Length: 540
Image (cartoon, rainbow, N blue to C red; front, side, top):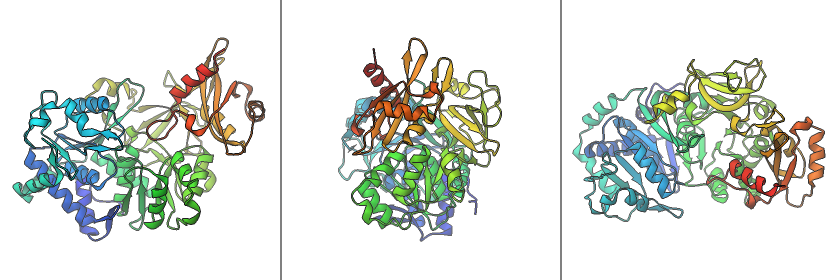
């Protein structure tokens, strides 16, 4: 049943009333019911009010996947503040930039995580912190910042300890929180999620409460979620895939969230199996690590059923086998489209879930246009995907980028290539900026990668365009072979020639080991860096 609530705070209240004792959140040895989650969020929300946090403020969260992330986000939502999600992979320079751009009133963080010192980075931006009384901060560079809160047991100068902050909840009566929460509407900001793109600095994507709840529910419906489902979540909550997708999808259906602080395949297997998780959220590189882990053969993963991923058909098939999610759904979307705008149905035939990204979600309109001029294209013709409906109201404190992100008819310009078929289903074909133009003809890297992955010796394939004097660009492929397999560049070229038009066949093929691919902090191959490497390797 679709939830009645249109804000994140109200949704937690609704669940606490309907299913007070049902498990909402699992993290290591900690288990929170919906009633306990509401109570903890209410206490923190009253503490926020005691600090002077008000509607329209920002609460920055710089934490890995932990209960405090969700509690702080719900507390912020209840007082009308937006959660400003900061990547745990951020460098000190990136943390400084984000804080100065977002201008939050509170930062919730920890001293350090996985070798990254967050409090030290914050002290660089806010040197006054070391001398301030907790809650009485006055910063020259961040004048809106009232307090930095740490979840560590150890106390730090100038920083509010989580437990000490919670004691301030007693200063604010329940009716004051009730009034503050009543003033929050579906159109108010729930999240500001920073995403990298074509610009030199990240963009803060604004997502409103109503869209988060409604679109999250529709994503859950495509997965056929119920209150009995349990989502395993190791993808970061600071991603839209976590906070604007997995979180509202499971919460709007009354299920449980099983958090993994950060991805590690052995621990993931233990959680998936021991907690009888039924829903997988992850990428192909995570599934492959799970599949190849020595513990995989002794883990039945009997509870697994569905979930979300994206990739080539081979990636999705592999993921199903890796985690036993036979009703896994394929998706298309972006942070600006509240995570997903198109999702296959868990009960769609396998071939449909492998080859398409499904039908647009309710309220989503997706069209394909000719890149450059915006002319609508007919069904099944590849062009740029544009989306209208449940999309971001814009970029935080950036009206210029907001204007540039939409066309004259209000469609969000995705920068992605794809088709809308006669059947209305979306088929993603890659990023427009990754398109290779060889001899004036467009080549989609995703198509060439799919052919290469069909070769039995090929484990991974990544195709980029390299500069060429006569053709402008030519396709080049970086290949990882399966362990023990052999294949030559000539053999793979011949394999491609049998299956692709000549202009699509890679002109250069380079073999790499797994650890030789340039990766992002989340384990995805960085194609711009790969292109630079191949340009050097293949230079005449």
